[in-house]
Image 1 (cartoon, helix red, strand yellow):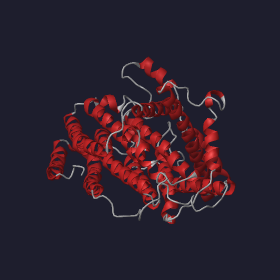
Image 2 (cartoon, helix red, strand yellow):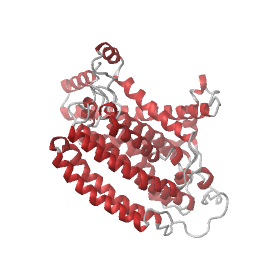
Image 3 (tube, rainbow over the protein chains, first blue to last red):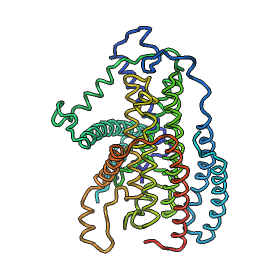
Image 4 (cartoon, each protein chain N blue to C red):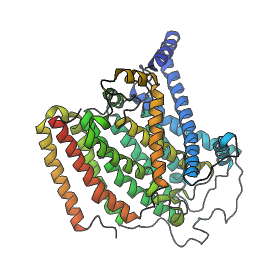
Length: 123
Length: 358
């Protein structure tokens, strides 16, 4: 049941997206019109608690986050596969349970392997 | 129970009766946009006051009291102040990404807000993959936070954004699995169908043990998703200034602030939809008189009441638990919460296959 029965969902999703963009754009426009402007060298410097910044900030970064990002990718794709199963499983009975059991077993083995190898340990 | 669809249908018939169809759709879209915008702003203002007052009461203070009766006008003053502050442009930022980040954060929360049903007949976007669509849109917000931290050219914001990214993507898995548990039980992803399924009793009671475990997992994961409570490492004030939005000033900062509160409302709203029956009143099978009294309360009050209650619990967490370290946080998700939610999903599948539910 939609708010307005005649409009398609895609049109509504686009409307909502444009609303979000419009909100940011309009607020920025108002802020630009009424806010003061001034310029000084000190003000435009990076704020790191008053200590002058050293070197580049857009650097190669700790690899720990990267490992979790890869793990996330595996399990997020898994969740995507679980959704269609979740919708139909009520009508499938024990057969659906068996199929997803095998699928989950493989994935849990993967998690166990990553755990054993120390990928889940924060270094 | 009152059906808001009567109003919208009347409005639609009125427009279609006096103008071509494309113009009617255009006007309706504009009306929807204005309504969403108003709701968004009013909710954000309400949540700022709600959190400040609750935070004060938890600490035996009064909170804002001077501006207006009980400080009710304080949020308007704050918003106006944020609007008139200067937008500082910094040296060495990636300008395009720096300006793109607030658009992503705000747009994702507006689209999620438009997916929630507020009452009978009060829903805007209603995809048949509703809950999946909400999760997909919520991932766009993470992208905005990562971009904000990266483009600011500041090491603290970079660390904040990376922590936030790691935290949000990790807990998104438990969040998704907790929601899938309910999808297994209900057999649909359409949000309004999910609500209608709960007409007899809420999923929390119908699914009993697995549903309650899923609800607890969801609340923990949602707290982490919104970067709140014990999981507020991305903006740990003592370590990282203000986290990923340190370098944003004026209304630019305000966007992140608004989106944070709206995300709190959205996760609470989804919790109330999936577990506590959304806008459905509390029904107990067999108690007809009680059900009739509950039906008398408007659906919008039920939905907002449940959402505000869950937000209250999440705000309560923040003032009860100390902040966790990043290794503790990631270990908690990957070693305890995720295996538990996978096991819980299988448990629910077994319960559904054997018919051990109401």
